[in-house]
Length: 196
Image 1 (cartoon, helix red, strand yellow):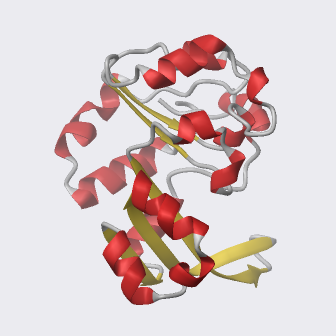
Image 2 (tube, rainbow, N blue to C red; image 1 turned 135 degrees about the horizontal axis):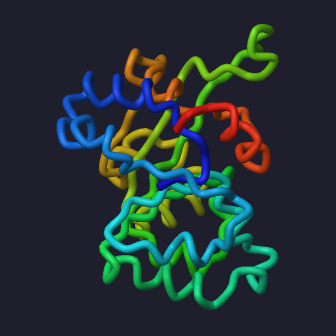
């Protein structure tokens, strides 16, 4: 389940290339759902036995306005394991999300990279990735100390997995899954033009 539109053909190809057999075999059965960003956020989190991918999570659980998130949503996030849910969210930076939600994270994947201007995209294009996977406790240690972040040996010790280098073919395939430049608020308009 996502709050952004996924290109079904690109997803099928991505699953085929990566040998994600179960997902590939079940794509035609309607197991991938798009939920409008205009819907109630707490209702989105009530669907059991699901993987929920949320882009721009800071819109739903901002650190500066934590009172805007209903208590049912906090409860749903805290009980995601009981509901057999995996919640994957993306945010621009870690402090954008309310700290009570960050405290229940199990894994953090921190991504940054080198970009160049692309006149065709009329935006920045990523050409080099620097990505690290952490347990949340190690991420807090790493993120709070700028000197530590620049020490590659300590980064390797604190992180569980690292991806660094130019973009690969798999990275390019993942960028074909959805339009990362599209505004979430306008996805409902696109939904009427695309078959999902």
